[in-house]
Length: 289
Image 1: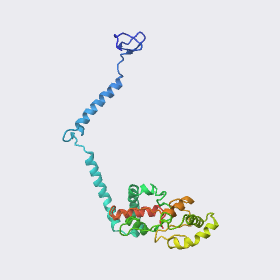
Image 2: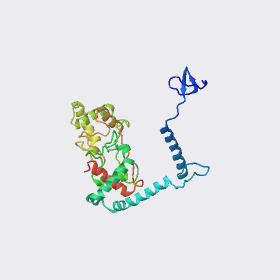
Image 3: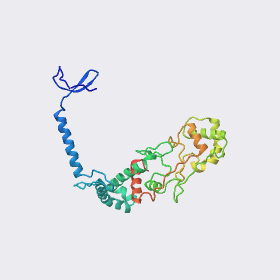
Image 4: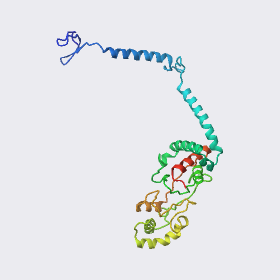
């Protein structure tokens, strides 16, 4: 509440006349340094309003005496970047994959471009470092469903997997349980057989019962020894790499439902030279064959 202005007995400073619960507010002046900073900010803001775009209007905004435009500046930077990248892009466009790998400068440029584009378009599924996840292949190991040669990688990126586009990689694991191709007990036995193929302890009786089933249903794609076939994208069942999980529940689920991921077709979305750059980046940094 307000009261009459008085002089404080302790400090000798006049009060403002404001009092709360018996406490009176002293009328001390603001610190001089704070006032100068405040005045400086006011002067700066006025100068900014005059020199730079600042005030919105009905049909536009004040341009300022300097006519500064961040939009124009970004446009100029992008044009300069296009010019800078133009020579390298032209080389990538005309060079073969073999030529790119033999030219250290061109290969380094391709890897820089490939890393940038990979982060924008591929990392969502394969991870920032290409280590993948459940249902998404790890590009850092030496396991390749469709081949790890530079040409194989470029083809997969270009055409995709299971997209329905012309030239796309195509394979389909049968849904043995969902489509009632096998009985539940047969799927259980086949699960034990697949566990056995990866050199882990498994039920001997189930292995014996499942052997004829594997030979008639699975050998065509995975081979007699279960080592897979890159020509049809069939995984190796004898190693320790599992796209959908290595435990019995995950293996049974894959036999039951026959999961299969989709890799986008990047042709038409990315330029041919950009696809080359991604292929070089993946091959050089992710255990290519």
